[in-house]
Image (tube, rainbow over all chains, first blue to last red; front, side):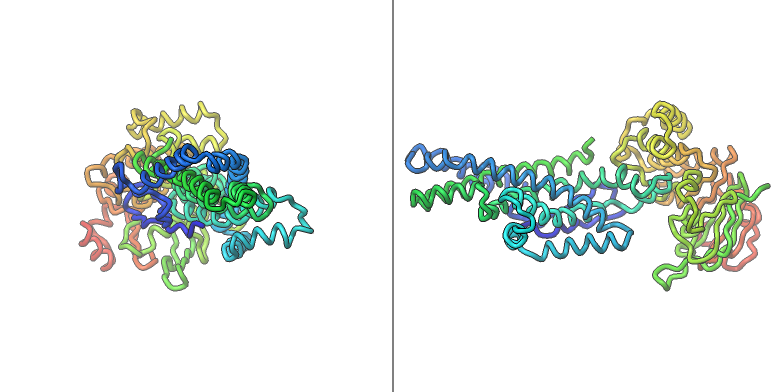
Length: 274
Length: 244
């Protein structure tokens, strides 16, 4: 799971764009280590190569495993995408709550963030599926999406809060001085600028969520990991099954982290995305 | 002359200890250009920012055109529509181009039509000499150009008074004049202006009255000619020696 998102030092005299650096070093390929033999290239193309070569060299079991898991891949992605969608909505409102001048809303949002970030995701999944099961009566996938959205919403809230607070105070003051309400100023002036600087950290959360989605396999969700486990337990090919699963996760996360890095680079160089 | 801004007994303390304003009284008449000078920390920016309630006073009252700014129940947004403000750091909206910076508030707050707002925006850009920058982005402009756009943006709300908070302090020397020229034109047109600045050229050319503040109080006020040639107070004299 991604840790906090400390803001890079912002010099008020310097009008350059503010960026948020998230200290999740393993995810973002460094641009310094370029070249053909960069760590990213070796890992990514190595993993892709293995996923192609292994079924060719020994179709049984690798080809069978590969044809067994696509259902799981779809489940993994639908859980991840739904969760990130709801987490963004929760995060936006909780983040606004965290910077609200209304003390009750502010306190409530902060309590939400504190509680959720203090409980492991796996425990939250158990809690919603098993502990609240009789009450909520949710199937595996909706329970998984609910738990992941609530959990990641708290982390998103902190990204939104940090992003909003990274916008110079003068922006809000100028908007207020022009007769806008705080809400209008937020919507028209602050949030549009915030979105630009929080895109990379949100991309990181997406990758973290993609990986954490493997936890939902315990809630009777037939995701990628669970499909692998199913194959393994019927064929007793544990090594081969979990190797393929690990390689698929690796290819996906490396692919998306490169995408996030490119996006970050683009935002940094072009300054404005209009 | 009619009084337009009336400040009475303004007191403001920051963090419970720093006394920014210790009982300031000031009236500004319609069409008057008042320049506030004083050492840093003298409370001049705080005073200016209280006028449109970007700072809330601890006690005292401010009336603009008879309407209370300081009353808790005041319709502050309506008052702010009529009080334009220009900041030291320009504060243009970086995600909007020049014309959108200017037209946003007229369309969103005053509910003007897009075409009407753009037409007004173009007129104001011509006024500040930046007609060719209509679709430029703020970051592509020099500081002086940004500040002139900021003035046009404030004027687009058709304000009855303009507040300038050290409008040239963040500018390179060669850009100061272009901003002061726009301000001087505005003063000549009869705009009521409250200006925190140490630009003595502007003071001589356009100000009707100079206010010298120190330690949260008004020490001396006079028309520019007497203020610079024969200041009454010792503190004023010492300050003028530093800046002139």
